[in-house]
Each structure stands twice: as structure tokens, then as C-alpha cells.
Image (tube, rainbow over all chains, first blue to last red; front, side, top):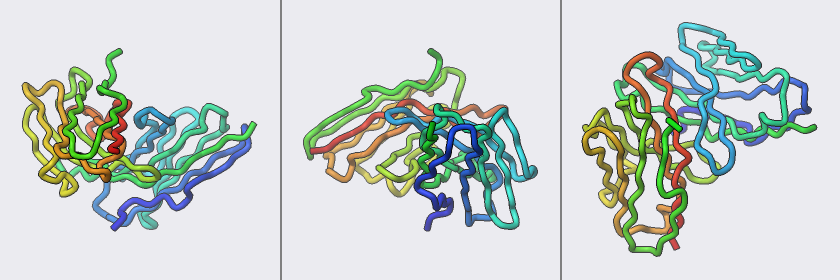
Amino acid sequence: DQQVKQNSPSLSVQEGRISILNCDYTNSMFDYFLWYKKYPAEGPTFLISISSIKDKNEDGRFTVFLNKSAKHLSLHIVPSQPGDSAVYFCAASKTRDSNYQLIWGAGTKLIIKP
Amino acid sequence: DTGVSQDPRHKITKRGQNVTFRCDPISEHNRLYWYRQTLGQGPEFLTYFQNEAQLEKSRLLSDRFSAERPKGSFSTLEIQRTEQGDSAMYLCASSSTSGRRHEQFFGPGTRLTVL
């Protein structure tokens, strides 16, 4: 049972335009969500996060939106740059789980075209 | 460099051999995690330490797998009698119990290939 789903395996966006990556989850107990970026041959790098008490969090070019009723979150990157080409993972955790274990989606490969 | 480090970065072994991987977390982090990632998938949780105590193990962690974190510093993950299905990227992450507790910082991973 996949609790965190990223239904788009890949996404191609023109440089300078907006990239929107989507993530859905099924477990209503998740209360914290994170986005990680991964380059080949490297470990995931933390990008941005959001608590379930918020519906938006912004950090520079990156904004994460959370829609709890739809159990959906999205990552917006504006403007997209060539260095943003990577695999993006959505992850979720439950504060009530004292181990803060992360449950991951399968990732979306973002390709920024020059 | 004060990030998470893992050694070796790559390991090729023959089926049936034992392998051991090492992870050095960020020094002030007392939580340490091991994950496994296969192609086209997100990382899957294997096990978790708080300080030297191993507090949780996934059902993915068969009895051929063992992890330790002596003295709450570095950690080792050993796989005995490796099988071809063990081929994967093994990721280590660490986090703090204070502040932004949900955020985990990852090492570069150890890529295991079992022939």
C-alpha cells in the first residue's frame, strides 16, 4: 500500500517557466511533509517542508502548497533554472511516531529545457 | 565537511558474501536512519537509532541484516549471505531531536551490486 504517491514519473519544463510537481497521500495521520531533491550518485538533499497547520510555505523560488482536504501537496519552482533538473521526492511523516520515519513517493524527474 | 558521510560509495560482491557499510552522521545529531533505495523508487525505511539504541526495525530488515551504532556515533550496516535482491543504494540519514525534528540529512549512499 503506497501511502505517498507521485503520479508523474517525469516532467519537462522550459527554462524560466514555472515547474509544478504534485504529490498525493492517503494517510490522514501525516502531519509534516517534505520535498527532497536528488542528483544522480548523490543522496537526497532537503529542499523545503510544510507542517499540516499551514497551507503554504515559501523559500525563495520554491513554494509548497498543502491541501489537507484533498490530501494533496505541490511544489512550485519559479522561475525554473537548468540546475533544477533532478529527481524530486515528496516525503511525509507523523509527529506521533517518535521516530519521525519518512514515507516517500517514487519521485518525479524534472528536466529543465534551455 | 560536516555533512553525513558513508563508506564505501560502491561495493560489488558475489552472492553469499558478507558486506559491511559505515555511516558517520552529523556530529550533533542523535538520530540515525538507514534506508534502501532501488531504481525508480523512493527510499524505504530499514532501521532507526536514537543515540546507541536501535528503536525500530522495518520488516524489510531480514535476519541477514544487522545494524549497530556503538557509543551513539557512527553506525554500521552488515548484510550476511548477500543475495542478488540486496542490490540497491543504501542511504544513511541523521537528524536532531531538537528544532526541526522531521528533517533528515542524507549521506551520498553506498551502491551495492551483488553478482
